[in-house]
Length: 493
Figure 1 (cartoon, rainbow, N blue to C red):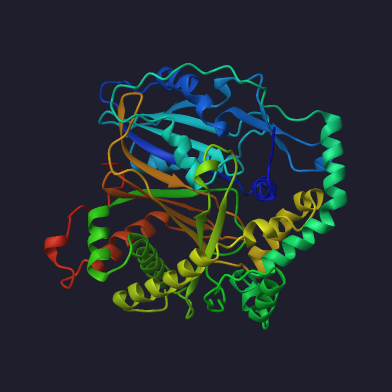
Figure 2: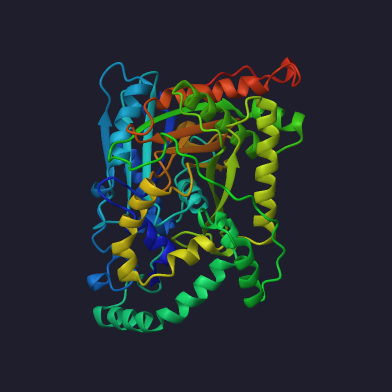
């Protein structure tokens, strides 16, 4: 019996007719021998779905929304509710693939079943197929999502034989109606005490919370709260961040556009090595430079830096098999206001270094604490309005950028080699109409960009700016001998 945390439930509450809160991935596979079929995927899923709770549990709602839902086994699990197949019209190019996936990505998942779908997409040509998989963010975060994907993949083209699903020792089911209502009554009665504790704990990170961290006295209140909670962790001070107005921010529509492509991980590592920084710093610099160029083309480049939200996993190794979220976030400036690419690179290193040092010394818990302040019935009703209002009046960030590390060796699904894996994430009114996610796999950095077309009119152009940004850094000071020479690949490797 597992109840959703306040943070897990928040991903349910944020869903509206214009917001779908699932994370997804688009895998391009080599299926020249025709091994990757719907029947092969169905066999794979039947054999391995029990390895991941996120794929086998459904929501059990508490009556009247009086408490957070529970995860429960689905006694009527039917693969036909989750596995689908379509074929692209000729010529089956990457634009058609992106349009088809964007339409699927915009649709919310059916809460009557376990919260995931898999779509086999044929018609790409050259013996390739695509497999698009989405799972609700209430069930997984970035780390557990990668682990869920790993259960469906093999290290060789011959699928490994797994032992049969063992009979569970006890049913993984939700409590009965009376127990649900009793639990809801108890948590409602004790909520004021827990809410005060959450407020105090969140106040310790007040200077790191978007918007409120820029208010006068935020740093003083944060220090006082840490004294009250006897938190002796030293926290490096963060700059006060004012979020500039850009076309990226504002209410989003229900439509989605997306683009995907790959950059050479070797090129990125060479830039990182030549400048004494991490791969993640280079990725953030590429995104900063691409956004600067894209905004300049539209005469919409603000004088102040953009503000980015960067999700951070705080999942413990012993908790890796649990369904749900164990994440926090760092907020940092993106120096889009600096014209020189080298200055932007150094500014990104400074900003991200400060944010990472702060997080390493005292991992922020404010994201989960803020979700716990209001009682469950109020949160479910208020969240959509709060997100919509924040998106219109005072967005806390301009966008989200996430970099997820992956394996540097080939993987296989149903005997077909995974050529690329493009991650695709969530858009909300509060976080803006653009989300850039990157996954490192088998020598490449695979980018998935999701956008609301009312906020971002050319998502493919933004992808091209990423390639140009890398070329800027691969200049004579880095050395042509380091250049891998692999351009951005819009389809697959």
